Length: 410
Picture (cartoon, rainbow, N blue to C red):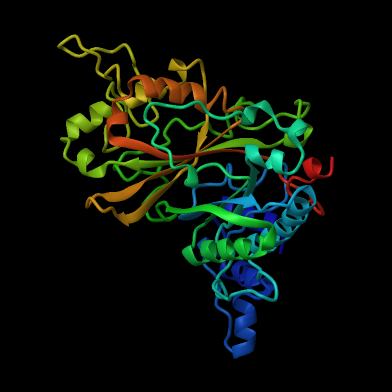
């Protein structure tokens, strides 16, 4: 059974017991192999477990893929002495491995068995290159200007040890064990040519947890992602993906990921009354509708005033300042994970947002919006940017290719 077949079934919402069983029987090293060894009759996977995402294609998976329940982001640095040849061998290994894992198959002879009983569970593995990668591999001439360092922002309190990196990997899945299994396999396959620079884990609401499809909420309880660009919009590809014919051909079909660890000061936020929280955001907490009225998807009425003559959506509200019409049409596809890494020494939760946004050009997407937010966003008093990275994510490989092949073999 091909991954494309699985994806079509997901869209139609008609994965039945027979189809799911077929997937299990084709998943070498998975639930069927275990059943055959034990003599048990394999049980059909649910729609959630049987959903597969193709590894090969015009774009890498994990960009327009629906939000997954679990995620890991990890950055690696090439070790001293490792260069272009080692990087090419690594990306070849990683690509072959990701293709197998995303199809619900085992990670080879050394598979840990962590995901033995599971299907692909919408697993995606996405690879990107940081600015320093091009210095390490002698490919500086191929480095696009879109990878120029992000400017400093006043709200930044960045930890350099948890920022940047030569190589970046994003892993997402709808099952926590499947996601961890992929993370462990990718780390082991990195071999001696790299060392881990940093790793972070996050989560979202599980698919099917709500009575109907909904925009996700963040840990502040706010609906987050209402005005995300949609693939159905005519200019979506132009905003999110690098076009063919661009100066750096190896990035055609690719995108740029900005990754930020944003700590939410939840104790302070939760002390605010509901009305004040809504004024900070500019939207109702209950349903995400703008304070100017309507439903979640209603356009902001930025000029609307109340009986007191004041703007209904305050001039420093997050929704107003970040609105595309307030930023020359700047847009980015936000695809974050929430995180909670325990309680800090001061007794406050180490929790917030692993903010990941995608755009064809961060100098026209993330940077102008963040600059404006930095100058007067009411939300800034309740968040802290603690880590940051910018990565070039090439287009998806075709059958028989590996991610970044056009760059590394140019």
